[in-house]
Length: 307
Image (cartoon, rainbow, N blue to C red):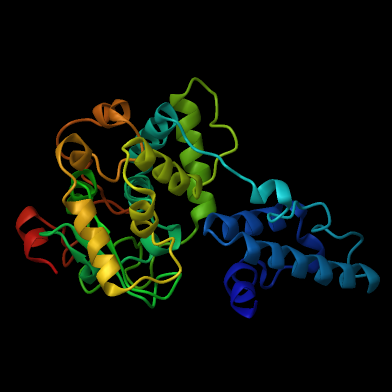
């Protein structure tokens, strides 16, 4: 709990008068934790906020409790959440991600293509990738179940990684400073939603979250008739698997033949795949423009040699 508070409360509320914090502030932080795939932690954070503000009300430090009306993210209705994005919706997310730019644009597209957890993608480091063999190895220290996880990357995912700008002296794939992985997912999704509304005739996507991309990936794999046990291991859903089992899963995914292999990692049918523009993905740029002197962008040759 202390880690959640230090990460999700203090950086945003430190120095603010307690009476200035609103229900919208609490909702923003709760949703940010949920978007990281941690609804239980978000529920605990909400409960902590409610206790804190209740004490503040009793101490006459503020007139009300802004956390009281905030929805608990682990209510039964939320636990039964089964939102999956359709092909048209995924295409809107994909196109809006291109407009969003680096770092969140390619990050969200990698979420679509791999079905991995948001935090595991956002904190990815270049040494984890072998772009020659198309394998991304998530170390056990970063995996939710504590076990090393190997991800078989599709051709579209490899193409995106090949065009991501790389800061010198930084190993992070998605970063703005080079010193830490990217953060601020709630605000980034807000910007993404604005681009979606613009492209969708003023209509937003109904009730969707970043974690729904993971569920959509699983649904898409089912449509490709990939065995359920393979999909579970592909997204690291199993509690803990042996090295041999993980290797077998990677072999199964990378050896899938024909059209299924070409769109492995795409959580939809051929309709969505065909709609992705042919050729290279956008040439992602850093938020402040092209890489400055000392920074470098990976080329095809460097990608093949990078481990």
